[in-house]
Length: 184
Image (cartoon, rainbow, N blue to C red; front, side, top):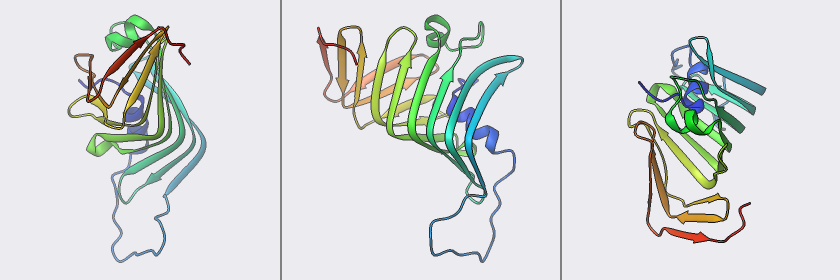
């Protein structure tokens, strides 16, 4: 069973209709979405339990490609006994913010960009320029650097990979840890 990520839940909620391709339709400019919502709010449930909530300033769905795009997105994974991943279950809500999130639930992929921030209830604050989600591999990864702070410790790395199934977080490239720094 895949870990319930708010990005995937948001995309799945938009993809109730199968992608439709219209032949012979061309356009000189960027494609227009078939659905455009402003001030969108999302709630995701697993059975009767609320597992995630979120919002986006703008949410667009492109039916011809099955892609959904959210601007100024905020998601929060909520702890649910017996259902939440250990990280959320043990440490409380996990908050994710991104300037833009794009993806297609049918492909099980999403990309958050424009500055991605993660905040845990236990005090971890992490920032990366972009992160990608792969539902098949159950991983969140990025290769444009990450800075993570907790209390007076800062970790910086060139890349990261978070396995949602095992909850293992790997840093690679140039990895540095510094103690005695003020967290943001």
